[in-house]
Image (cartoon, rainbow, N blue to C red; front, side, top):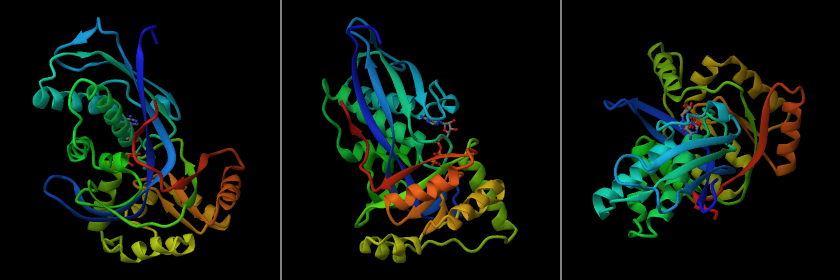
Length: 322
Ligand code: ATP
């Protein structure tokens, strides 16, 4: 960072899907989803480094570059395909169109990753949400603050999981996962998370599900979350464990046999329940307490072949940290 440069940083959290029901393939290429998201304390940080007032941009992107550090940093794009970069561009465009933004300082983005990339934990989406929050704080110094609904619309255009990572907590997601309704949830849930060196591409996992369905090799979609909603009211992880479900688990297991081996190992190590997180390959083990989660994780990581962490949820949405 050059001297005189100001920074604004925001943090956003990973998610697990406690329930992920995948319905029909829609004409727009997305699937109808019924999902229950829980945000976890595992997070990424996005920092805007704002160039001095001598460096103005009138059109095009205001982002001069992007750097990445932390977990899986090498797998994260550093160009305008990065979701955090696209989030800043989208917000600037909105201010140009609706609030006569004519010039802006140039900004550099730096992302610190704690969330695995292509792990089914919404890492890219979290970065987009954090970038929206940081860029909104910056632009609303000179222009009006946007309503939450406007930010949520921008988030939904960036990706199906971005509205949830913006909001956090425990939410029911419908549509392609972007239409959110808060759910009541009591207590704190502890997870042992096991990461895989090689990620899984979300579209590939959905295509595998479609092909397993064509062959009649998977059960019907599960779109009912009533049992889970009731279990979340008890605050009892044993109740919640009985209602975890993910329709993407079968295709993820099909594509990656090591996922199935890890699931079994975690159950043998005493986890209450094992579940692929989102489109995988991260495997999430629900445990009864933080200590229990540490024991399970120690067991699973003992031979050094995998990495992972203990996390708890629900956590909050994307927020400023400076
Ligand atoms: P989800 O759970 O939302 O399906 P995921 O956690 O499986 O997503 P991401 O970590 O969001 O996957 O990354 C998916 C792909 O998106 C990556 O392989 C990468 O090419 C691209 N990508 C774009 N921006 C980012 C970012 N800021 N961090 C990580 N990956 C990004």
